[in-house]
Length: 142
Image 1: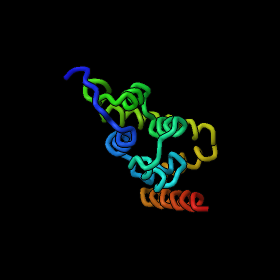
Image 2: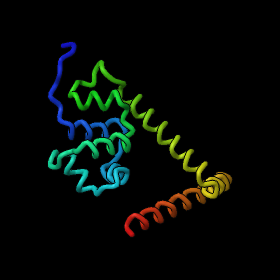
Image 3: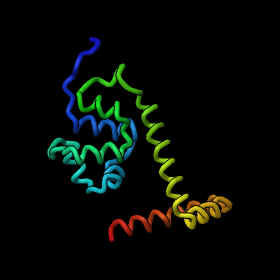
């Protein structure tokens, strides 16, 4: 039925958005939100209330467009109201890429390092990426 409202739960919608639209694991999403995986799990199960402040963090971390946030908040069906998941995912990836480019422009040494890396063999690029990931994980745990 056109204009029909459906009772949707905020925590279920945010979980669906994470899984189906932006395709992040719970661990990746928790890192972006700067919370633990257990805390995110509690939000997604509805065991922990999502405050306005936390909702804003979800919106920023997941790059949820305002119209999609409104749809989620008002419990409206996704069909016919908003962009399909592929369009939302592309928008998410575009915003993420823009943020990465900004970071590279703000940190010229990192940009030069990555530019130099583009001339290396695939094996060397893979080794570098693995080392960066290990360093990042170490810093997160520290």
